[in-house]
Image (cartoon, rainbow, N blue to C red; front, side):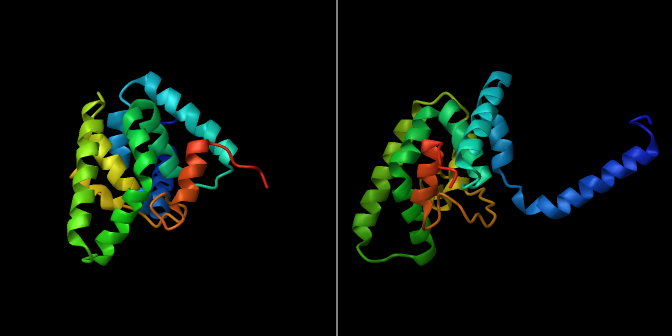
Length: 183
């Protein structure tokens, strides 16, 4: 049967519609930004290979979207990846604080935000990758990071094993170490 036959095309269209119904909630701005970040075939191949290896060692105990994003940042924007590891707790707290409007000791919070923004700008200036794409990816990982990245393109599904969750240190450790015992 020819691939261009109407029956084949209708079957493919049905499959695409079903996939859209099942997985449309997984689509966010990060996908396009990932494409902007991984702008060479070599970079894409290297990142995908690293994701597959890590996924096998982690045994699926992290969010796949976040594993892909962090792996891409690791190999294409290393200083940003290091920043995220160093400051993951601060970025998780930003996410919670933005939801709860913490007013206690506002001056200290503003000072911490200023330090975080300053470090972000310094680290970002040392990266030759697409800065807009990096901002979108970081904001997708940590919703509260919009106050330092300036990107509010965040479309985040319910990620149970997210690095921005209350147990985020567990998931960040798993992704960073790239290994988890089978049991």
